[in-house]
Image (cartoon, rainbow, N blue to C red; front, side):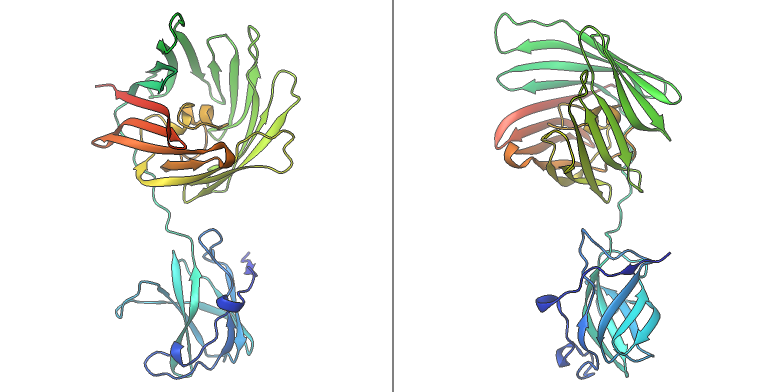
Length: 367
């Protein structure tokens, strides 16, 4: 059922009143006065197929509404909207299937007047094709602290089956560590991640997407529990973290994904524990998330996230399309990302926190 848009009405500067300056081709003053368009923006666009109401005084039954791209030229072809209802003080029409800002043109009494702008959703970019070469290993460096290598093994379907953490190098003499192996197994409706301690995180799947992670303790190691939901477009919508083993604390994060790109993470007001997960993302339009491993699944790529494991194993719903250029954690600082490329492939990612080096990821590929 089509929904009627009462999005809030523009007043003051947003209030559009037709006058002689709106007329085209010498049409003179607009016969409709005190025109009000519904409020719209990139964050709250007019949805195609919805019912739009324009208010004003002086509409006639035979009036027309045309929409043009804001960058229109003299040769631009507009789209005529389907008028549903006209009264002297308002008209309603069905929003056409358009993208981006659209200039609204009223045609009446043989004249045409530009009466304002409505913003439609941006055209959604198709996901980039996943590049064929597989990541063999990633060297992770925390300057002035440590470095280590994560080596990946795959099954015949290209899924990660094990991650070996090796070659640990510490900035402090006398500190050593043994290689550690995380194993991953896949079943029809679940994925099991077994950590070096023997503890497990069991992902329950529905339609290929993780809905829960259940932690199974071993050797005094207690993986936390999580639940996940997804939006109508198949992207992550919420995650809820539950601390183990006491299950005393929990927190819910809400994700905003626009055109396939993460834009915001915020903590739900009813979270029992402040989790510090609030973040605003600025995405790099030139850096698609198209390596064989989803980089949002690498825990050292994003500072604070509940989503690394589900993205690592391809169970986080639709893959986010772009990689970040900055992630703003508010009072916890701003992370800035710089990417070094070798052709289509990312070879290095340098992450700074408030201008200071935080993490370096060097990515190596199998021949």
